[in-house]
Length: 264
Image (cartoon, rainbow, N blue to C red; front, side):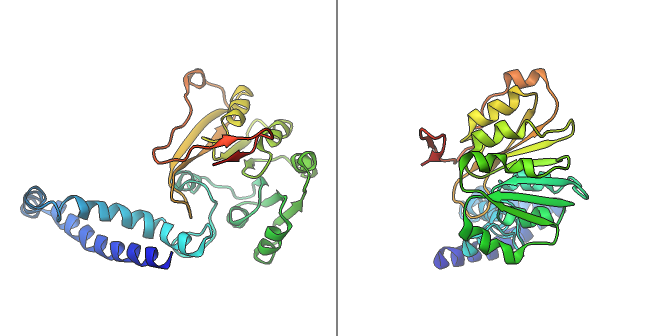
């Protein structure tokens, strides 16, 4: 992994030079014409250079290199972010969650991210060891519940008595969690389903319940493949009837077992 990260760093440095050249190329007609001629004349200074810019954005600006090195969902500065796709994270950053109540199936660095932006955050997880790793990093507005059995895990949301603004399904037993979530939604609730391309039956349940799905496909922290993070908004639309399943380019295929859990 260290060798791969060093390679990414070299690509990033190369992309800085490429970005400067592109900036000059679009600054005045003479430079732009010179760049265009160079791209046509020399493949090495054309396509790979532009591609290096894209690698630089993904590895450096979005933080994929840092997260791969740390094996944690962090941004380029090492700050916690959700283990969602980068397009979903960028959209979520546009919304103001000040004072909002968040419930999350599956705790982690996403919990820390939400705690820094919302009013209250309550998470449930089934892994005691993982909870103890997260606990020292928790904010004062966070609460984490451990439940190791399927029904108790899904019903953990019942312990949050206040209206919920955002509900995240990103842990185990997602089918049961989706069924329970529907008992706690308000007219303004947003539901986030990570790995929505894997859990199409869960997505279908939410859509049939009147939510409109918007899928954000792409790369995300740590992983070397793409996937879908879907946001479900509380309004019905005729478009929902003709909405197909997300099919991220570069994703991995999964299979469900008898207990509705996915595996590669």
